[in-house]
Image (cartoon, rainbow, N blue to C red):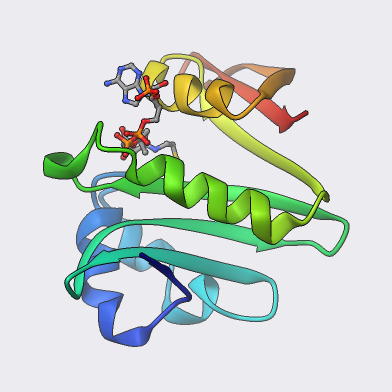
Amino acid sequence: MIIEFDKKYLFDIYKLGSLLNRDYSRLYDEESLNNGVNKTFLCVENEKLIGFVHIQDLIDEIDIINIVVSEENRRKGYASKLIEYVINYANNRKIILEVSDQNVNAINLYKKYNFIEINRRKGYYNGIDAIIMEKK
Ligand SMILES: CC(C)(COP(=O)(O)OP(=O)(O)OC[C@H]1O[C@@H](n2cnc3c(N)ncnc32)[C@H](O)[C@@H]1OP(=O)(O)O)[C@@H](O)C(=O)NCCC(=O)NCCS
């Protein structure tokens, strides 16, 4: 089940976020995950946090900032549910994201939902390209 941000999961969000960046909890305080622009949608099963997607709602455009699913729950369709929720939320507005050229799993996930490469930042992540993708 996908739900809107709920503070009671903040500790679990930080645990999952540490899979993305070891400084995750310092980079993203509660306000930067959930305010007028930033929204974090949670995938929860039996009150346990399975994954989340953090987006920025920029009115005419939605940016996907981060998406993560706990390691033991991958390849079960949870990220797909989160992406579908964002697509539905966007309601035909533009959706943009940035992903490392080497993150094959994430690129496959985005391609599954018709995201295509629109730009590339050469060497952006320590020599690895960043790909900018947009939902078509
Ligand atoms: C990327 C990530 C969110 C995918 O989550 P998931 O719940 O396993 O994804 P799903 O089960 O919904 O899979 C959706 C699609 O993603 C792709 N995919 C996911 N894992 C994959 C893998 N290990 N190998 C190849 N493709 C993969 C497939 O196209 C898959 O569709 P399919 O099952 O019909 O083949 C997860 O691997 C993750 O949390 N990775 C670490 C964080 C990260 O890199 N986030 C993205 C950058 S912010």
